Amino acid sequence: MIVPDPVVEFQGVSKSYPIYDSPSDRLVELLTLNRVNRHRDFWALRDVSFQIQRGETFCVIGENGSGKSTLLQIIAGILQPTCGQVKVHGRVAALLELGSGFNPEFTGRDNVYLNAAILGLSSAEIDRRYREIEAFAEIGDFINQPVKTYSSGMAVRLAFSVAIHVDPEILLVDEALAVGDIYFRQRCMRKVHDLRSRGVTIVFVSHAIGDVKAIGDRALWLDQGQIRDLGPTDSVVAKYLAAMVKKDASYLEKKKRTPLDRDVRFQAPEICDTIPNIDHRYGNGDAEVIGIAILDPYGSPLHLLEPSSRIVVRISVRANRHLELPIVGFMMRNHLGVDFAGTNTAREGFELPPMIPGDIYTVDFHVDLPELYPAFFSFSPAIANGTLNSYENCDWIDNAITLQMGHGEGVIYGYLHLPCRVELNSCLKRHTNLSETSVG
Image (cartoon, rainbow, N blue to C red; front, side):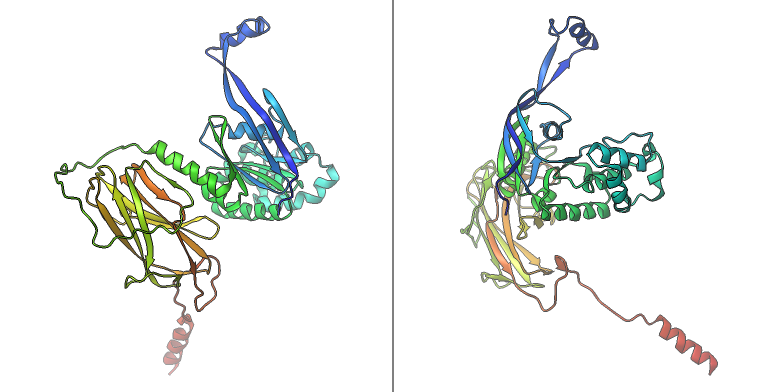
């Protein structure tokens, strides 16, 4: 439980950068001691106010150019705000850019000592921790080579290793882990969880929404330098994704179809008209989800999911406007709110007929569940119009129905048990028999 104890405080913080149309304009300002104004201001941040509590994992999301990196650089003390107040309490270790703070001419070892000294460690303290830093980075003999010979992944490995071994009270991470290999990313995420358990405050910027939802206590959504939303991670991420879908929903290509010419509305023979829960709902309203149910193969409602069983995810939708290429689907989430699996009619190669206003379709997804760990799983239904590459979201309902996964016969290691066949290797036995036959 996080005790209210702010370690980072922003009060009305704004940051602007001067933009010049040509180098000569900058020179004119310098020569006139800024009495002549030849620039325009670009505001990377505008009136940003928030607090980050001690021990909290605080995630910052937003599009490229929204001000995320500027915000982290202000926390790190690299930049000063144009106006407003910033208070930071505690030692800050920052992993902001690939190899930031590294001298490319120095060896990795030299850069370890240089960066750790900048962060306040004495030579004796660095000596005690050097072996751990070297071991975690796992770059081998390259530790004694100039950093300019490193790949981007090697630079990140060393930078992250230094950042986490200087006992930071506040760790800043800005998308740097995105370039690492999956093995190192997993090790880094485990280390992040370890730092969280030790009470380290983490400020995490990433476009990997799955990582944000997995580790974030709260999230800040920046949009063009301003706070668009601030609150629990799941809520903020859902609103952010909805905005991105709406923004990107434009047709790149359309299939040519014969225009609809019918007055009779289509109504599905079986209609599900119950939505047990609505955490968040968004879409353009051209169509709507009117019901969802989880059934067994015989059509009876399920109250408990069973591992290694077949279920039917039934979704009923109604068109409010003409949909040329309707797509119906769902997302299955685990108890942490992480998107676990999902599908839709287009993904499965099932093309739905066009819909006119008033049409009601019911789509049944026959799903073979693997052997999953016992936890709660929610289903979020949706309807869209378009293709997999370009569509408009009509209606999406977060966590419309949730069911518990029952216990299987065996233990689940991890998230699911993969179908597996085990046999005793018999090559040695056959070789022995062959030898005995030859001797006989």
